[in-house]
Image 1 (tube, rainbow, N blue to C red):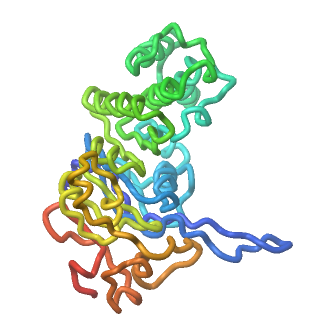
Image 2 (cartoon, helix red, strand yellow; image 1 turned 180 degrees about the horizontal axis):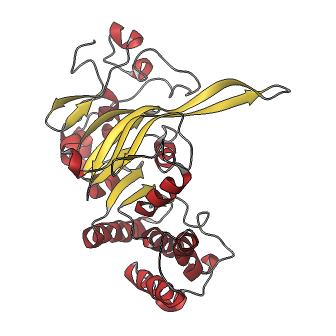
Length: 334
């Protein structure tokens, strides 16, 4: 991938949450929610991030946006390391990086009208001198965005509780577009919606991407959603990326044992094909993220594990063009 095409480059990102206990609330341990994530996204691309609940997908998005201050690693947006950015530099960077959250109701202020919610980012950046837009221009921008995401501009004085779930998510999308960002971090934006509404929102995301040249990090646990929306897919397990590939290639040729098990669990809407498929059943439970392991984090549940997997962690390496996998089945230990 040409470095000039990169919009977001994440290197060895870590997010460890302290666990405190005792009278003095001393740090006794850590939750290793994200423990060394590497990936990059080029301009105009959609990278889907998929994995089981609790694997660290949402934490990764929040650490990238600096809503959580990462424990370690590097996050480059347009070549600027956000980990080393000053408060003013980070504020400037956030014009180009916005989020759409999972819960379309909890992410909206119930005391603000939909118009004020969409206009809020503009007004905040106006106060900082980073946006030059008057009151009339702001109102016009709000109305245009509402129409663009499928809401009537006459709804701008309504409150969040007066909208359906899908309409609320459209408000969240309009708010994310208010500052004309290049990158949008989508944190499971359709998981709380009905299936029929999901398809409308997904198509809206695709249309907006073509119209405005947007780049997405799209987080979901629904494999069908990820396949539909993504150009490339990153598979996450227990705070680590275990495989990255083009969407079509990943679904046709999954390499990591965890990816194979994950895809085998997704139903296929064809009874004949479904009846002939072999389901991969994982043994054991997902390990607790409260301790680091010297070897592969998937070791305890993997049917193809080797002795080296217990003592050495496999690195994410390219096995063929555009396909990366962290597994000793495909490259030798160092």
